Image (tube, rainbow, N blue to C red; front, side):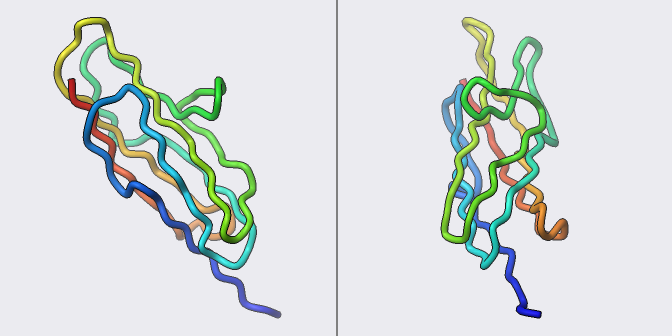
Length: 114
């Protein structure tokens, strides 16, 4: 059998800044078509704030990317809902797990400051 390589890169690999939306581009650097299972972990949100993973208008705490061929990319958005006039800081970690190789996990810390 021909060996295959599963490899993904995330850009940016971490984010700190204004929100309310942060796009993270995942690029398939492997040799096989693959997708990622996405979830939000280590959630630290002030009262009234929320965060979801979105593709267009489809948002939730978990999602999966479409199948991405080698060399291809996909960009989910982490969307924060921030109460009017709110100040402070919120943080989550976007976790991406390869469907083809569950041992490959990317963790992208995201911090929003107001």
